Image 1: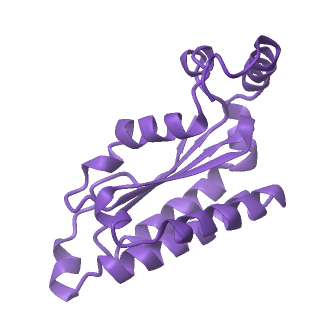
Image 2 (image 1 turned 180 degrees about the vertical axis):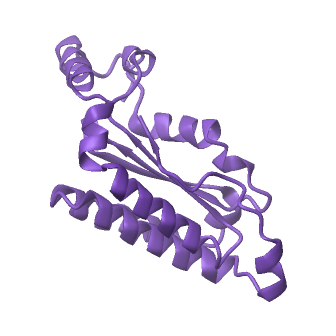
Length: 178
């Protein structure tokens, strides 16, 4: 939604909602042991394919994004670049992005994988993850989403025995939480 499309009272409410959420809220819904399990699942997944999966959970948007009334999608695309998900050799990185203050879910998929997977499949993953999050199952929802992304990457970018040994881990497996 553009800056002029949202009324000033609505923008103020949005600003207050985002200032209410902070990193401690993100750590509450995904404590360290959950982050460890998600990291392990991402690492295991990346042994089957040449893709890279990043999970990013943000409690709220930075003030600069709120000031210009930027969307969760805009922030997810920015984080896709900032976390270097776009920088994989085969252009097959996937960012799973959660914005807690707005209950927003975004999947940002690099062009190498996007050309193989129908957008409806990505929308289905977002719906499933949303159902899990609404039920309070943050860790389980993210693990299930990582498994589904793994399935898609394994289908379109599988590794054979020799490639498996030479497959570098191009990005950190640990979820980025802030």
